[in-house]
Length: 192
Length: 192
DNA sequence: ACCGAATGAGACATCATTGTCTCATTGGTT
DNA sequence: AACCAATGAGACAATGATGTCTCATTCGGT
Image (cartoon, rainbow over all chains, first blue to last red; front, side):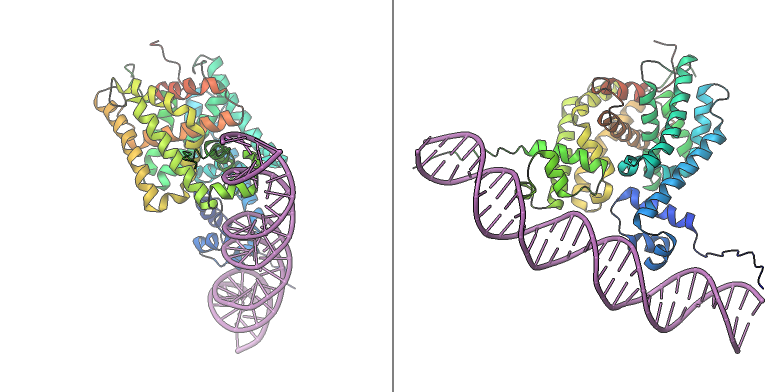
């Protein structure tokens, strides 16, 4: 009578598979399942055993991204301190999962079905709120809408993840590169 | 005996078709040909008459993007004046074709075949050179690599085009939004 | 009004991918 | 050693997109 705890060994690491899938799908949204499987080091059959199908894989990827991004935002404590520091914390927390996030930003295709859209809208609101807070408290400029700042944030995260993936930017620099550019811009400032 | 000049009336506007295709393909890379045709207001048959196939369409899109971007850079006279103004001019010139550019940035899939890669690398170098010039002349900060600034530029153009397409940013604001954010960053600066 | 080019609508075979299946093999556990 | 779960390899039909074709229609210029 096995009161075994059903440890569910699952040699296959879902997280790892999803990360590989994100890398490939960000690069080419039509990447076939067998390529994804190969990249993850498993067979196509096993891939299908863990994810009911392509749609389920994409869905899992979205869920993972939303979950990780949510955790990043929670960890960043966006409401505390001044907005600029909060934004720095957010970038620092989001940087490790930038790859999956980059996929989310580009894979706008499924954001039509309300369910995921809702989950994403929540995150969207939190970031927009952060930018608005910064504007209201005089830290951020007000001639750029908070909606645009949010989009720009996404764009830079995505560009950064891609640049790292392509070896054009060192992973160690990513955090600093995104935060500094977003906060201070390109121009050399005297006050510093 | 018609010494007609073969004006080739071609009621179909290739440019228009390509723009529609860019919008759809940026949104969803797997968009079927019939959807693209419908969006362009023509039949699938006609679409195939003008572009040998899906690959040819993508290829034409890339060529168009590279051509338009090249023109934008030429018009912006990147070598003249200070780098910041040159960057402003580039953004202003590139903004009208941001949609096609956004497609180019995200459709990294075909950058593998050397031919297009070469054409793109040329543009890449010119932008990178602009940022480097700005750094050497003391206008741009040097703690961010010119490679990263280039990637960030792409990312913001893409994010901007997308934001406009989604109605989150007014087309009229796009130019200002991108240039100001890129040059000055989010933070409110005193010197102004 | 005429004529030819361009188009739209639809049929059709082809192809790649997908999802499901079976069977043999591996690897860890008892 | 025996066992069971997980996996890999491959076959298979179903599906959807693609590319090509034909034929009727529309449009512009003569």
